[in-house]
Image 1 (tube, protein in one colour):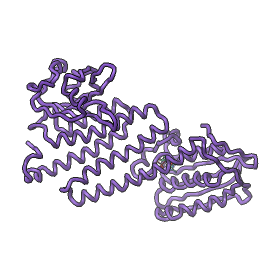
Image 2: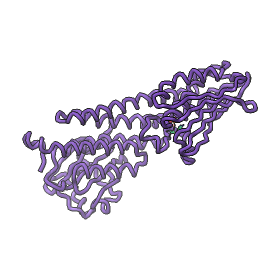
Image 3: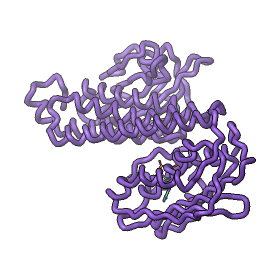
Image 4: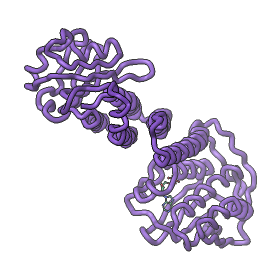
Length: 415
Ligand code: ADP
């Protein structure tokens, strides 16, 4: 039996197990943050709850105001068949108590607990002995309850309560997020994306608070924190850029822009990054190219997004080429690389917000917004952007911009 009321020796003996549980919590919560589909999400939460509390089964109930009841939305193991979408009263049950008080409960012996909803076992054909229940609480309300039933060995400990509460806090955010995500406007998507690194940071901070943490683990967790903070930073910058572009309030300049000079400047910005990755930069400029009309600063941003991608997604020894030439009454600005390339399925989705190809997502940091921003900029200049690529061979991104002084710059791009 484990309990944190036991003496310090027991605590030290239990320590590796405890650390494992918290590490597992960290893994499970970061999984939750990336799940948009509500049913999948709820199922993941109960599976995580059962595992973390080492119980026979876990269930999740969400509150419904109209009927003032809690509904079983997901369950594991033996509970699955019985609970269905059944409701239990919010006033007259253990889950109801947790919900109305917004506090956890441990009932080691439900038979003698007056709060226990006796019809429950008849409904589920499950013999409940002990229950640990915690509220699913967001900043301003309680969404429902997570319950773990029958500890497999011994009794529910304070540690179980804490770990389930931490899971519930993340789960509540993820549930609210997933409901928000369904509305799918930019703000909801942004909040969702910000919460992913925030969830990781919260879990990492919990771990760091443990005085007994070995130095190597501490270093690893600090690295996670740094990585996630950097990600938050990148996301904030890109969100700001994208929301400016999408708001329609952005005032673009209309000035003659010599793309040759702009490309040279952009290459200087990325040169150090390219050198550190042993990537060669080349140019193919048509010297007779006429200027385009537009906003120099945002056109430079567009080219920089394409260049940093070409460098990020290429291996050492690869070549990245910027090419400028004209075709009919259009100027073509191309960024080619001999990097990892993009599969046809991924090519179709690259310009969607937050989309990242599977091969890049793990080892290369990014937000999945760079190309959306690039597309918005091209379109706001009455231009377009397209991609040609083959996996393992490389990619070519082509920006087409109209040439000539009649170029209009619209403030509200259409897709
Ligand atoms: P990110 O911040 O992920 O780089 P982007 O919107 O700029 O976001 O790009 C979206 C995805 O497109 C990337 O995650 C990557 O998978 C893929 N991608 C973009 N440019 C390239 C490239 N030059 N070579 C291979 N894959 C690329």
